[in-house]
Image (cartoon, rainbow, N blue to C red):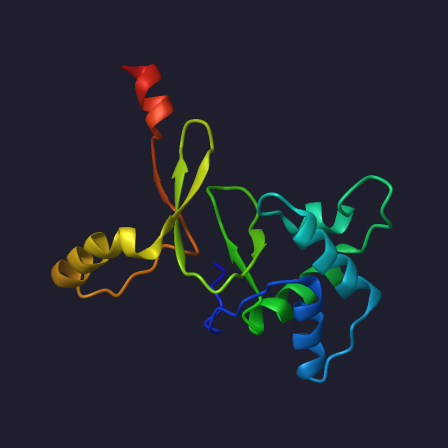
Length: 154
């Protein structure tokens, strides 16, 4: 099982801010790192490492998968990228924006919905009170049935 990174969430506002964060850590800004960052910024939704390796479009030069994983690991360690797992699919990666969120996933259609962390505070408090756990919902989404699928079933 993979574990979410414990680094504080940074704010990856722009590709240059991410590259400057790498430089600030004394890391080289390689072609592969530039390609991964560019792909993440061009994405409209979280991507798997395989999708990132393929590049933002078919005309882009692909980056080997091992380099993508190494880059993503570094970016996550710095708090610039977060990953999560939705069901049995591979992990998905997205840029951090300084805001903690939880995820809801529909077990019928696969829809993912981000929710503000505060929207899950009551659930977190109840679990803490009853079971003693301090929980987060950012690495693995809460799974259920979305309103659209629930409406079709009824």
